[in-house]
Length: 357
Image (cartoon, rainbow, N blue to C red; front, side, top):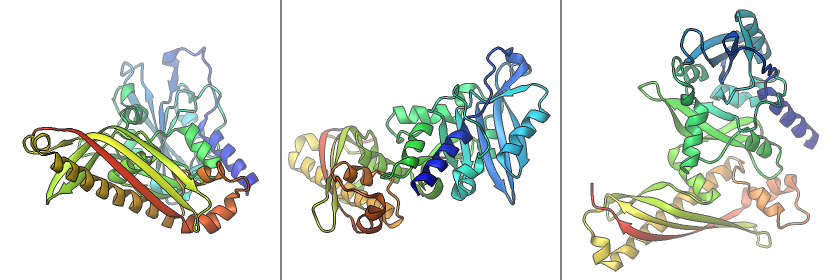
């Protein structure tokens, strides 16, 4: 299995790093692709690409589509139908429809050769709509509007877990963690947005977390900067987390084995009327306790959801491997992970409350 996993990982690496990096070509004589999307239509695979058009559009993006039984044939078709040379070394976004991702990521791009000029920070993402619609939404857009830049900005803001080709391959090959990537969609204005987070078992899509679950997932990873909705005395409020830290502690000696997450959050309350927290300290503590209880229950529900789906996207296996000398992946996921006892401790410090909006 280890050899097969390595082979699959190397295949995946090769599939997204596309050959050809002739740096001496004149810019208006080549098509430099920046985003690629793959869909499945029956037995055929379709590919749509975006590239800056410097001849007719002054560098804004143009779209090209191809189809074939496998991606290799699509790429060859692009070469045949283009009057200019095509270069792939600037691709920063590879978008896969959920059907393609469910069949296996390597199925979508099993023919593209490794290109050292293409960095490992290439975005891999699943699309809840068709990958073609995601790429076509870039038509006549500027380069800065690619999915890569959208996700990178949200990662910088702390709203989305860090994910790219490097991390996907690391987790893909890891014996103690499953890979993941963002999920994209289009709004009514045909603008790309992040609608969730996709969890994989090896190279196959198994589960897509919604936005709230993605925020909780990010919280369990550590250093969250997110917003959490909660209720207190029948009213809705929002905790804006300014600072946070999560520590995971494996307990291999318990029966069943257990994993504890210690979550500490510091933030402020929005939609709270007046300045009641400053005047009534006891109310502040009651607020914090309500938040702690609700976040704890949500985190436990997410952990059990991934456990039920046999997904270890948080790397619980890696944490136990770090403290167990004789740790074996097959035995751990067969015997220990299904019965793992997850424990969550949440401590919230409310620094101030904002005036009601």
